[in-house]
Length: 392
Image (tube, rainbow, N blue to C red; front, side):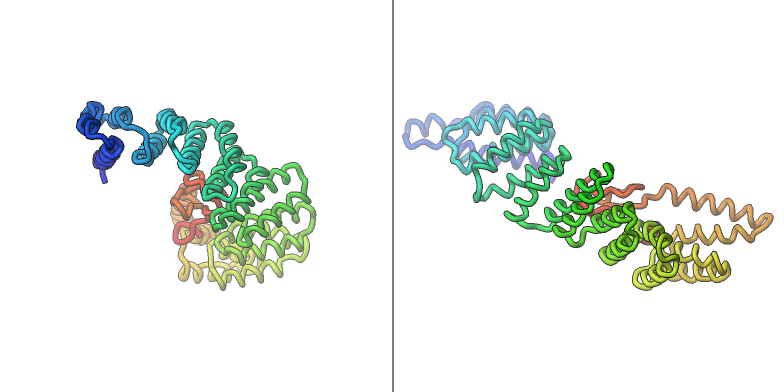
């Protein structure tokens, strides 16, 4: 539906609400209030001239607040907020709260919208006070999950991870769902990262474990726990965590491999590491696995390494793998062949550099860095390495 169509439908609904709101039991009042207010025609004139905000303002002036028009006012306030006209949304919602005739349930509905207005306007203190007051006076009500969800949003925005965890725990008890569980696990990971920076290894590790208690599929927590164990010199335990992470989500193998290689080199050498790579490549091949195996084979048998790479590229062609093959060919080339390969290598390298390495599986946001929270849609744990011809 076009924007002009949307506003026409809205005005029809508004007019119906006006008509219902003007009902009166006396014959005299019925006759007197049949006339459509001039503000309605003024609003239509604004609408036809594509002055949508002015049109809504004009109609709001003519529309009384009562049980028949309450939902219309609430919708108008939401519309203003979505259009970025936050002050108008606040004015409408505050005017609704000032009406003595609205019910307790309607008051809670308006308060929730007003809290959203404050958050959109950056008035976080006012939003927090309003939501905390509602949370304490609306326990066991139908609005409690929504109130808690908004509080979690607020504390997440403020990066008050301890408060976000506290309210998040209440929220999943009230209304457990996969998205909130995943978000809570990442809050624990954020707390753990802050503690890691201070080298407070024990509480950091505990938060990673709490994240896994909340969401057993949280690969970020497994990788983070392995980093803590590595920093403490507990390399064998770190290896276990990293192998567990590979089982949780093989798509993150490109991040796991260098960490695992470092740990293996400090305790057991390369034997277990190579066995891990081979097993993972059998389960779910990726460029990172193939490249790691090629680097290992190059140490003992260059011809076999090249043959292995060509075979893998036939089965799982990727641009990164092709670049590695050109790199191997360069070492043995001379003259014009070498010059041509250099040009080809540089072109492929430029292509690899400009291509994003990660992508949000929710909104499609691409990037060169891994963000545990998507910068675009703000969802947690939805950004993953890109796979296929242009990725892993």
